[in-house]
Length: 262
Image 1 (cartoon, rainbow, N blue to C red):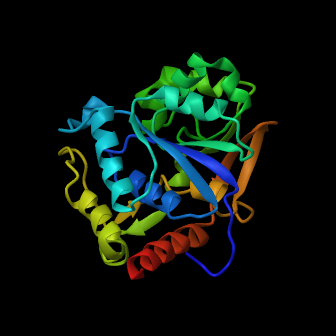
Image 2: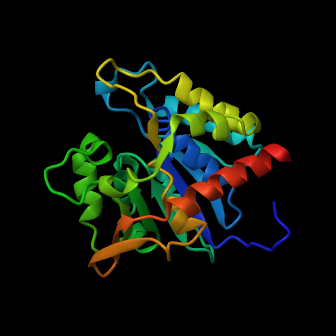
Image 3: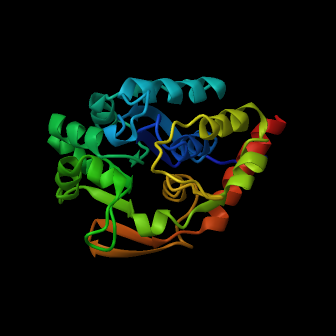
């Protein structure tokens, strides 16, 4: 990957509704291509029925995530709707700290805590979801509000949160998606195809910008959040108010292009 010696600094379990917005798959590729984190497992949730997707189940999401993992030829297990995989990672005897990165509803995270309430002391949740401003709709929280309320109420759980107002700043133009990501070898072509083939309901109108909102957790796991900003509403919780978009998206493109060159 690089002439510099980069060792893993954390373990990562990635949880998302992979059959939905393809920004999750872009983030998955970014994590998998980052040598500073070690992806131990991928778990999947389902999609909200309002989208009327032909592939709405956790198994559908796991299938498309598995395609990407196989394309990268990595020995990472992919699970459908498997809270047990999260609980098992939290219980594992390993010197590396565990980050559970969730870019969708907190359904599986809540179920994992219910399976093993002591797990909250053994991992950090990095969640893309929620809002800073009250009364604003947000898909990841509102798809399973009970799970979100339950997880966020866990006082022993360390949480890094990227709310709506922050993750929407990771704008990427559709032209860049097609040219820079779609042109980055077989992995980039796979990712771009997910955007092209995404079944969108009629009420969604596309513009020329597509936020890569599920990408910011890479700053916490593999890169560095020192150039981002956050508030701390509780001792073990950070709510990010700004992210270093240049570092994040520059690193993503470099890793995709480097992998394509190899």
